[in-house]
Length: 230
Picture 1 (cartoon, rainbow, N blue to C red):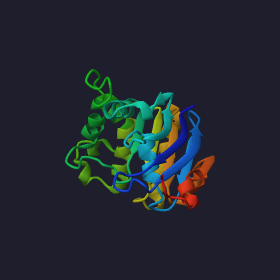
Picture 2 (picture 1 turned 90 degrees about the horizontal axis):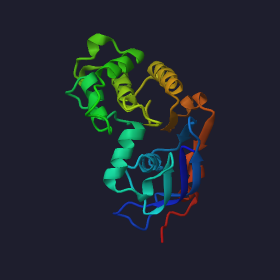
Picture 3 (picture 1 turned 120 degrees about the horizontal axis):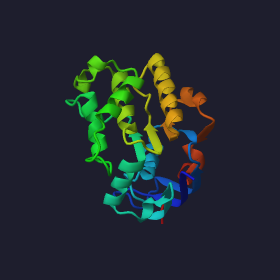
Picture 4 (picture 1 turned 135 degrees about the horizontal axis):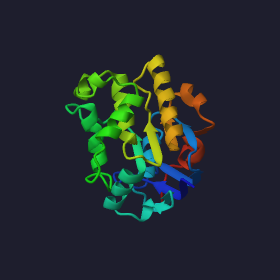
């Protein structure tokens, strides 16, 4: 099993009685690809941040590849994420003044073997597979198109050869053609590397790429009317 959730309830510190997520049970198998949809503000990013260990729940359990995130401290969760999880952020979160290769290598630095292995060759392999011309590799990423920045973000998420890839609204800034190109390249890489995929979006037009489609509101009891945490 890739992910197993049991009785997770999450609140933010500034509103400790207001539940954002209340998920009795949810699971995902290894190498499964799931599309989760829901409106803006519905808790999608919070859900992904819990699965990646960027947020911590004091109630319930979250196991990722058999590792209990709910029992780890902040440092342990950060290291687990670097070693096992790739994350494509909605706003890319690239360092604008670094070039594509250096943005990717920076992510590799945090891997447990990051200081022992030169990942430059693999970084350029990923950029090639993502159809980014070599003459753009040394440009600050702020000089690249939005579509190219998105592909650099994918390469950065894949550099540590993750078992799980999480993508948060990855097509929100792309037009229809670039969106289709992005999804095709993404699935080619996912299949090639046997990666489990969670993609979250409000854009239902990309759901046809997936065999498993779920609404976050079907998982989350808060969406059914009770947002109070006692």
